Image (cartoon, rainbow, N blue to C red; front, side):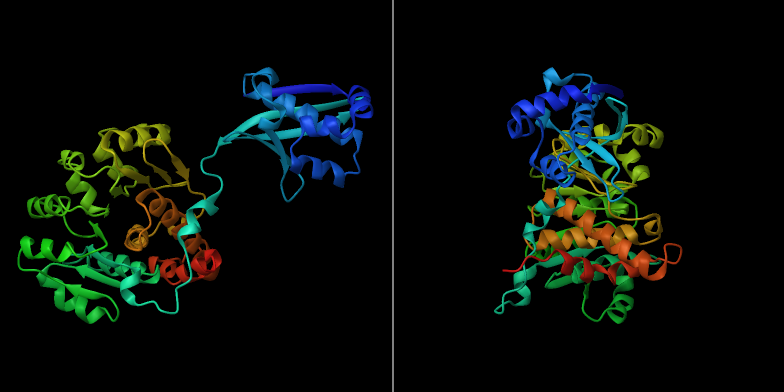
Length: 392
């Protein structure tokens, strides 16, 4: 929505001359006052910012009477171009001066969610000198099948690189030898029956299921039994397709203990809407689904959405080079690792989404977006974690 305002500069000058800093403190935020100070308290600057706030209030459709001046904040980007923020809405701004007038035009750009990413990374701490591998989570990733060994391999190695102390890749018996040869640090395991698998999983700190596991009745039964466990669980890829045939499985789960990580095609199978319908209303449809099934939904795509039905995080890290086979498997491993280290499901999904995208951005710089493959993302995870560590 467009908003326009014109302010007479000498009117603002008279108010400023009469009230001085009291006027500035009433109308402008601390950051805006610092900007005005840098401009040597120019009346043109003050009038321009005042007009911008009025224009923004008109863009909101409320007018300044329904907002306070400090609900509206004006910023300047690295090129000194102005933009405004009202609550979680961002507006493009144009501010100009014509003789004795300051003129501002405001236009809605986008809605943002959880703008301060720092809150998610308070969970990251450097390791104590007395640490041992059990302190950082025992993780099981049920992934892989004949012809799809890469899915489990990528997810499991991503979990290790994200800090897990022990990672098990649970695989069918017919690929156990292959995976045992492929791995050095990850432990490949197979079980004769579901009962013995469930006993093993009882001792895990977090579980993922789905990447490359296959689709069919046997896999549906496996998913059903795993979801009976009182554990935080990530479901991805084939796991989501198997789940789509019996969504009631989610209703028996502890609230918000399940993270689903579909792309739009997989989410279409879950919610019964077309991909076009989803893409035209991603946030609201994602929120409704998460609320209905008391789960955390991570809807992949440009600006990946994470929601628990109430809160929404819109991730801005990542690049088109990450649209490559296995990238989603890496994300699954990263989120599962965070869960295993005691991070809550919503924070783990948000944090994992950012870490994954940021690692992809670093990988894209190193090898180029066209050449980027999923293992390049894994190879850059450590750099992102170092960026975000908070010292004990």
